[in-house]
Length: 229
Image (cartoon, helix red, strand yellow):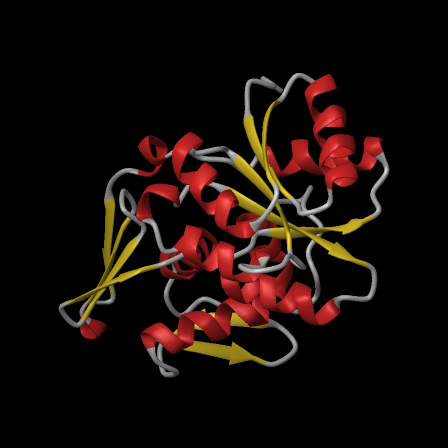
């Protein structure tokens, strides 16, 4: 892997910032740091990193709100956001996925595990120029996807989708009516190397339904999901 990737580490604990940034820089990554959510948002827009490691529990603007603000910026669509959470913070992990996060790492984390997870996440990175073009499908729903801007065109409205929601909808749109199993969705949207919680897909499906309506995406109990033809 080409380690000339840029990583932004946002955490309010100085010891954690120093430890994690040292570990990543030793592997050849370019690392920027911020000590709170507000400065993390500013730094993200300034350096446009490939990956953001974002602590959830911070004073002021916490990691969830920071993620939502970053995801609301179309220019930041390619960035991968991985939350840093303490053990037992299951509620925070779910909230993180709802805000547009891609994955989470539980603190404390061993250096080798951190590096392995970061490399796995970065293998999923795709710059905007690799996602150009649009997909025009399901004419009965008046729906299309703009791959260049991560925008859903639905009933003459433009809806910006966070990257994972966009990729999930894109996958379902490749074969309307076909049932995609949960295992297939995990593999194609998150990748085999990414470890995500069992409710990750459910959270993203729910967020998509809030934007496209309940009728478009059907749940096949015990199997997976499909688009209504």
